[in-house]
Length: 169
Image (tube, rainbow, N blue to C red):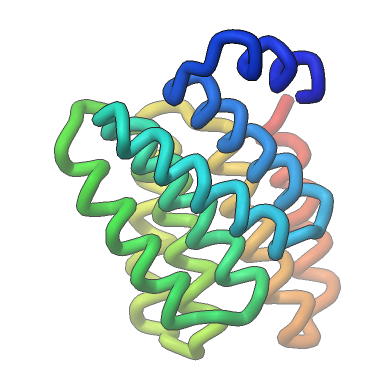
């Protein structure tokens, strides 16, 4: 990221900078830094919105929603994920629905909305299978495994973790 940022500083381009911020947000989230992820995702959202990139806005909103969820800010996560879903409806990329549905599943489980969680789970599974989105399917299985683990169902959780790993192969 440092070299890419140096190049951007020489010739600023909001689209490239927005994509870089989006990548930094995803990295921060994966590294367990939801505060840094949220900051970067919101900066990406600002930049990508300024150039009219619907795909970029959707992705930045999704990342910001996941970061807000990781921080325990459920209302903010809900607002951001709903906005991402609205933006997703403005362009052709139905395969992105699976990953967004997994994030909505995580939110519904965190909020204790089990009926909504079941709908999100079904939507995520359908979309992931339809578009052969193995990373989204693996993430879905991982979320399900984590929910089972927290519910005291370790053996079932282990089976879902194994299925998640298999989905990535």
